[in-house]
Length: 146
Image (cartoon, rainbow, N blue to C red; front, side, top):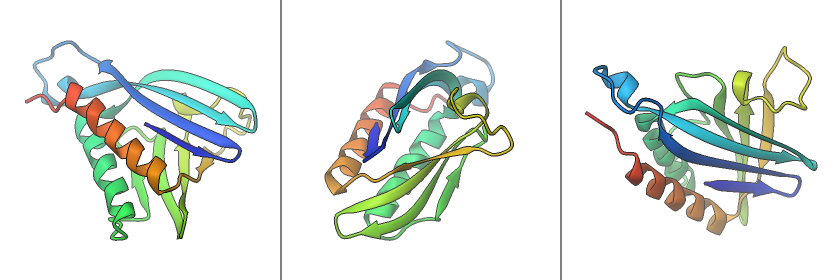
């Protein structure tokens, strides 16, 4: 999934399940996530178990609710507090999202450890639809495991 803006980009890819198998439902559904960010020509890449399968499903639903102008909430947060999404506005030709990057998702060039970095992205309709479709395809490869 990729979202961009004039000075920024955010890419999220599911790499694998964190655990190949576990007897605990929650552990079976943690995902290794790759994040690639760019802000004003500064780039950062990290890999960490940031989301679960059902949280990716929730992210897809949340983004779909923004597209349909029936947003579920202005912010979306997860069990691991290092990643979050905020919907700031809707314009005729695009959207404004803030993506919270904190703790292990914080870019290494960001030097204010007292607060998370908020990455602004402004995808247009086509890019947002493509990002949602891409994330759905990734989740189909790594579905919720019972």
